[in-house]
Length: 430
View 1: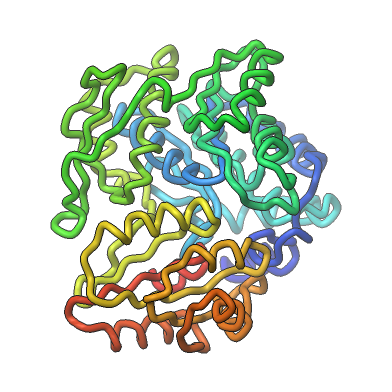
View 2: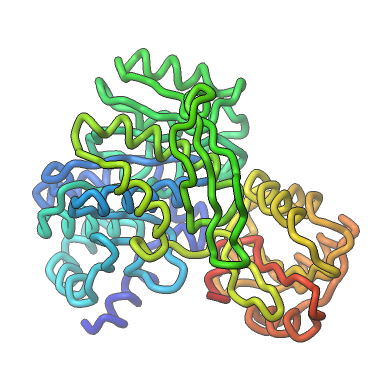
């Protein structure tokens, strides 16, 4: 099969959660175990770090991978979803997996996969683990796809588990309370292995404390130990923010430059730095590695779509925040920018809390409603109708790109264009 035929097989034959939603979710690890047995359990051949969480796990994964790379370690990175290219999901250092490797792997095991009938995600996990094993990496940073306990990645024995935060997302699959969602994410906590929790929440902290105690896992709440403070916002000048990080009111990192300019990264950087401390038992880091890595995360790992400026004339920013907590962070940062009129290109998927997000959005903005080109995408007409009940008005467009073009054309010199509502909406403008 050619590379395109191989991708078509992945997308058409294997149920893909990010495209079709809950129908692709497998509530057990049986297929992943079967695939890894077939591959002689490649996940046991490299060290790993496991990351779950409602928001921020992608940013934390990429920052941590950047630090490990800069410290000289051959670092695998497994994340999802991809924005433009399937190969973004599987990287070693900054390089994506090769097309040839994907084709050869699929051809070799296709008959076995036809028998096992895995989902898209289960097969991709097998591909990633096999690739990392064959390429003899030093360490892999593995991001969960959804939840934790039953996520396909949860067959690894990591050196460290990280849970960034708990919020409202995928409630139809993970549970309709924060405690239930936290219990699912806590499923990545392993016996005798430390765990870092990024954000402390009164509703969920005891879930983690009890699970860690049960597994004899050392537990650290990053936000109880570290605090990051914004010193300068240079995002419009040179795509950087400058922060100071404090430990118990004493300066821990001074003038740390970060090329991920969303203010919400102040929470994520504390999670990363706490995790680096935990990993010092296994790896050697110098402060200069951390400074260099955090300053060049995008270059070192290819991360995109996090408060990303895609044009300065007119000023156009996109962000993949796609649940209520993520959108609250986006709106908080929008308030820090001076503009005359906000033009909001909005596309969402149909299994999110659409009504909850629409209630948060500013009434003074002009909206450009669109649908990302995936089956899960919410029809733009329907989105516009739901938005109208929340007092939001605008026009409907046949595609994300046409919506963006119209917004940028309508925007005046001092206006702001923002693109968001879904990872897939952002993917189509990058």
